[in-house]
Image (cartoon, rainbow, N blue to C red; front, side, top):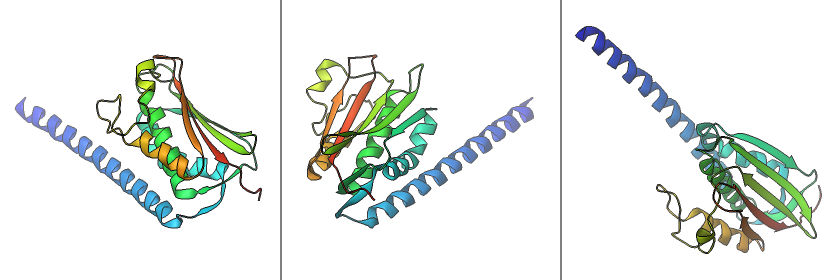
Length: 194
């Protein structure tokens, strides 16, 4: 009986170690991808939003998989913005990861990304079916250090809003309140069609 119990514990430890190693390897791949994108450029360039969204989804893959998220994309073809590719990716990855985190306890776990033309800009909307945003939280949403998550740091949305401004764009949020999901919209000036 003791022998079987020890074997079961050993088996469980081996399984957990294997899972941990798999996650560490995945994190290493994410870090390598982020470093690759980080070295590309800190200059403004013509950025293909379709490609940028796919790159961001790839970088946020672990959060999406962890929370068993379904992701939908509605991307207008030939959508280009004049932006810093690295900052754009940081914003998109942060918003996608936040959306996945918001849906972790939802019955429907869906993140929808839509790219659409709006006057002389393109809007990238990231909508989730998560817990939504309370009216009280809206007043502080983009402030440094503000978070509604127990494990949050309150830096992601603040940095994302600042990065959007640095690219002459805006980052806004919408929600009908708690339990109603949320929509974050990044608006950036139109670039040149390839």
